[in-house]
Structure formats: C-alpha cells, structure tokens
Image (cartoon, rainbow, N blue to C red):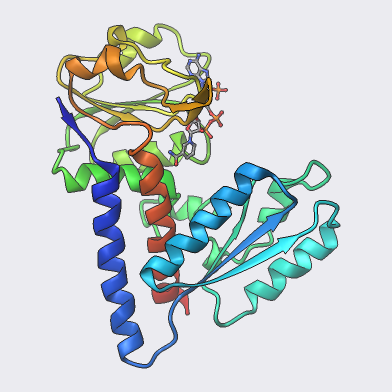
Length: 280
Ligand code: NAP
C-alpha cells in the first residue's frame, strides 16, 4: 500500500504557481486577485476564509476579504458581489458557505460572474465540463485528478466507482474521470448492492459524508482509494473510508487529514490564475 501524500502534491502545485506569479510580477504586470466574501461569524467558515487568505499570500495572489454582518440583506450582498464582478484587480470570487438562513445560496451564487467563478459551480462552468471543454472546474475533484496524475495512476480503461452524486464532488468527479477514459459508475443513497458495485472499482472515490463508511468488503484487492470525506468524530477528523480496515487491500490510498482537503485549497489558487489567464 502506498499513501497518496496530499501535502507533498499540493506543495508542489503551490511552488509551481508561485514561480508563475513571480514571472508575472517580474514583467511588471498586475498579479491575479481573489475575493473571499464571508457573511456572519460561523467559526468554521472563519477558519476556511483565513486559510484561503494565507494560501494566497504564500503564492503571491492578491486577496480581498469582504466580511459582512450576519443580518446582511440579500440586496447588499448582491451589490458587494457585483462590485467585485466589475473590479479589474479581481479574477476570482468565493462566497463562503454556508450562508445565514435568510439568504438563498443558489440565488446569491448565481450573481458571481461566470468568468470569476473559481469554484466552478455555475451552470456555465459545469456545462463546459459536461461538454468536455472545461475552463474553471470544481476544486475538489480537480484536486483528485491532480493526485492521480502526480502518482502516474492510470485511468484509461479502468473501472472507477464514485460514492456520492453531489454537484460539488460526485457529479464533476464523474465527468473528469470519464474525460480521462475511465468507465465510471456513480452510486448514491438509493443504489442497490452498493458493496458489490464498489468492490469492482479499480478506482474508488468516497464522497458520502459518513465517517468510516467504506469498509474492506467494499474494496477490490489492489484498488486506488480516494477519500474525499471530512467528518469530525469525538473532535478528531476522519474520512468516509475506514482507513485501518481498508489500507492493506489498496495499492494507493489518501489519508484524512493530509489528503484531498489540501488539494482543494491548492486548486482554488490554480483556478484563480486560470481565470486571470483566460478572461482578464
Ligand atoms: P453531500 O452533498 O451530502 O452528498 C453526499 C452523497 O452521498 C449524496 O449523493 C448521497 O446520495 C450519497 N450518500 C449518502 N448516504 C449514502 C449511502 N448510505 N450510500 C450511498 N450513497 C450515500 O456531500 P458532499 O458535499 O458531496 O461531500 C461529501 C463528503 O466530502 C463530506 O464529508 C464533505 O465534508 C466532504 N468534502 C470534502 C471536501 C474536501 O476538500 N476534501 C470538499 C467537499 C466535500 P443522495 O444523492 O441519494 O442523497
């Protein structure tokens, strides 16, 4: 069994990015910019936002943090987003989720310019991915693909099984693996014979949101197991895969923490540079 080291892969991506941004600076040009919008005081969201700002600083991306109060009205939030849409120094906009209950997330997100949608979740960016001509792609599945590439894990002709069909992970993951010529099966809460289907996967991606859900009966001998899950049990982070039970059976496996989560952060930075290069 080989551990897929999300820290090493994300570090390499960040180093490459820093070099590219240093070159932009050396030419005296404007550096890429990311705006992070936070509404309210959710402690976990505050940590995520602080990490995004810190990541930007590390690679030389300019960042703006717009912190709005919990009771901010829809119109005011939309005005903030539209101002950022028109800001020539800003290439990417992230609205940190979850939003306070009085705000409709889909409605709010739909106001982000498709050219600044560095989460890759707009109908335009998801559509481009589905058509096989991706521009800005969702960060978590993009990070998984980068990990597979880094470890030279082949996808062509392989059976890939994904547990989960969310817009943010499962669906775009399926599109990306299909584009790389894997034969993809997507499972969800109504899937019958889940364990049997999973146990046929050369590549198994778990994005369920249930701690240690995947056990060794669900894993093929020699499979590559990618654990997207982030769950908190007794104050400790753990994935959707029962790592200790499964690891011996895998050829490769990602740990939690230290796996996909770090890649998601790195891909947001990469998408910001991509938006700058594509649309600025
Ligand atoms: P989600 O929107 O809740 O989707 C979960 C998916 O799992 C759904 O498609 C659901 O099926 C399916 N599911 C639930 N119970 C199941 C069962 N018993 N058998 C088979 N399928 C089942 O979650 P998400 O946003 O995709 O996130 C999944 C996990 O990844 C969470 O732990 C989340 O925290 C983590 N995550 C991590 C990162 C990262 O950077 N590492 C990023 C995003 C998310 P239905 O569609 O039928 O309900």
